[in-house]
Length: 94
Length: 467
Image: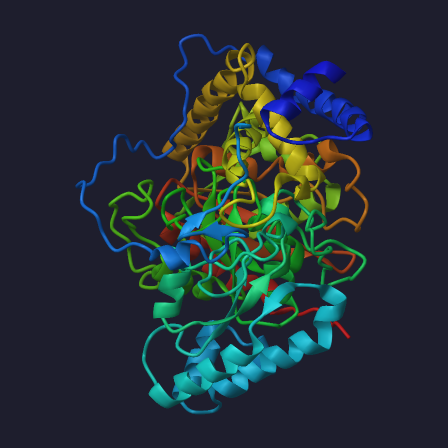
């Protein structure tokens, strides 16, 4: 993994990294990727992937509303609120 | 024996016979926390005022409920209504949940008193407790050593007699490994047996919700309370929950104990190997039949785990934006950043097939290995950690070396199996455990095997001397 890839990944993951961190992570992530790369040796042609391990599929429920939290409770941890809503920074400039 | 050293079973008995009150029991735990936690750092939050009120209330009202008036520690990754919940991370330094995790709700309904929230590797990322943003937890058996992780505080708190039981989460060994390092019984239930609702998510296809206790009976008693379908977690199947205590003393005459040969190879520490082999002989002398089994894809399990787990981590940690609760993403510490980056990379265009899809395919092969082994054996017995407890600072600057601590535990998470860690001996005064693995949803077999072994060996009776 080169420096540019580390920067690109950090951007995708919304993480701000210092130059020192980029260097450190480049080395460490490369080492880990080298290790997990051993899977290339395993033959997996026609093997189905497992993403759910107990075999459950399409668990449905009735589309009915149940008890839910009051908006006052939902907002209790927000740093900024306005008129019973979360207040966020503007995304578009005027 | 001091009140804070009792098992749940003993405490219930004492409370029932009015030998002591819940208030006395709770005070004994609080006193121990005050005496030792500056050194051990097992708790992030202690609910001192509230618990004494709750204990007095429990004494006044009385009930037959299984945990009535029993003080327990809760890993700080379980949402607790009105009690700060950090997941060991400064991103959530001031987060106060407005609802309880289902497991917490069930424990409370059974009468448990929530003593406080235990320290942990931030976001449950780690095998030593050293990744906590609230400082490392020390092993009560020797303060220079790690207690294991990520449920470091729960393991240390129970071993140091600060509570009567503690909860944990096990995504790659985070209950079984600290149980092994602290001479405790640790249960990782089958994936989906206990609801994940309200547990801060690490890797959603692997996270298992379990607990630490001082005896196998206590472990079964706790699972009786927490297990079962929950409408808030669609991965909890509608499979009946047996009464885990009912047949626990049945014995293991004729039980086929599989010995997975791959777990005794490679870099396994010689002393740990000796202890596991001695345990196998013990099972044999108790009436079990030892059978050699092979799990050929074991050597690839850790690689599979360190693709799937960071991928799911990167997705789960994407929600922390500091807007609705908590602080912005610049508060993530190194291990979280590493895993977010690793997961983001393996899921990104051009790499998904080579890494993530490949890992999910090898996961299938690992799961099939176990299915074949369980055609021959009823349960499997193996070491938990490839080494005895290690020193603080020994692995913390080498992520890959730290990851290798999980090599014998991640397999159960990948295959969704239940695993029970139980005390099995000591190396230079430090505890070493073994794990019993079973087929999915067969926890009762693990308790039966664990119970007879525990009663025959009594390792679990040994307590650390901490001053």
